[in-house]
Length: 405
Ligand code: LLP
Image 1 (spheres, rainbow, N blue to C red):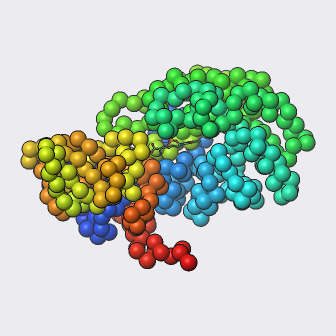
Image 2 (image 1 turned 90 degrees about the vertical axis):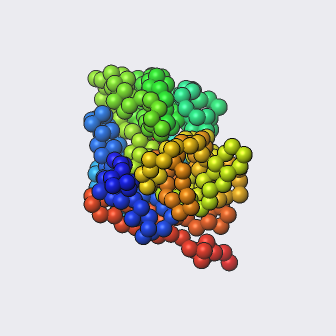
C-alpha cells in the first residue's frame, strides 16, 4: 500500500524518504506483513494445498522467518538456500530440495538433515541419490520433476516446461523410472510428481495441460500420492492484466476433485514481488539530443530484470510533484548500456538528490544482485507493523576483499 501523504511517499505508515535518509541509497525495503497477506490469499484460493515459498525469489532471513511463522513451507534449490532456511529456524521436514544440478555435497547435506522431499530431475540424479542414501542409511521421499513438453506463455528465459528446456524428466522416461521403481529394494521412495512449467505465467491453459500430463501418470502409478504444481503465479508489474490466483484455482481444482492427492504449490514472485521496493537517488540529470537520462545510484547490480528480461518496473518519485511529466530514462552507473532500470517513463522533472522508488522488486531483486564494478551489496530493510529495521547491512569495500587471499 504505497501512497502519497503530505507530498511524501508512504508505505502504509512508513515515510520511505525517512528510512532512506537513515540507511542510505540504494536500499531495498520489504513489507513482511504484505508478504504474509499474499501467502494467505494463495492459501484461501487453494485451501487444500501446502504452500512451499520459493526461496529463490527472496531468501533474506527476516523474510523466511516471517513466512515460516505464517505457516509456509519452503522450496530450496541449493545447499545454500537450505542452509539459510535452517538458520532462519525452519525445520528440515518443512524444506523441499529441488534443482537441476544438485551436487553430491548438496545432496549429502540435504539427506543428512532429512529434508521433506527431493525433487529429482534426471535418472543420473536418481542413481546418485540411491548411492548416497545407501551410504548414509537413509530413505528419502522423492518426487520426479516432469518435463511435460508444454510451452509456457512467458518470457523464454523463464519458460521451463518445453522439451528443449534442461528441466525435468520427459514423460516416457518418467514412466520408465516409475515402472522400475521397487520401494522394497530401492533406498528411496518415489511418492510424488513435480511440474513447474515457468514463471510469470500469462495463461492458465498451459498449467492445465501440464497438470493433465501429470495426472495421466498418477493414474498409471497409484503409489504417487503428491503433486507439486510448482510456482509461476504472475504479478502485474505496470498494471497489465494477468490471470489471478483464483483463475488458476478455478482451472485446476475441478481436475483434482475426488482424487486422494496432496497438492503442493511453490510460489515465489506472487508472495514477494509487490512487497519490495528499491530506493535510488538521482546523481545526475543528463540531456542528450531529445532524451533525458536520470543517472541514479542503483542499476543492474541491484535489479537485473530490465537488463536480463527486458522487464518493466514502475517508478515513483518519493516527493510528490505537480510539475509537468516528461519522458525520461532511469539508468544506473554501471559501465554497460544494458544497465537501465526503466526506459521511456513519464516522470516529473527531477533534480540531483531526488529519490525514486522502483516498484515490485521484492522478488528476484536482491537475490540476483551482484557486486559487478566492485559495488557493495545494498542494505535490506524490513517493515513489520509500524516498525522497521535493518535486516541486512550495507556491504563495505572491505567486505568485497574479505575472501581474497
Ligand atoms: N518452482 C520452481 C521449480 C522454479 O523453478 C521456480 C522459479 C519457482 C518454483 C518459483 O516461481 P515463481 O512463483 O517465482 O514464478 N529471475 C526470474 C524468475 C526466475 C524463476 C525461476 N524459477 C525473474 O526475475 O523473472
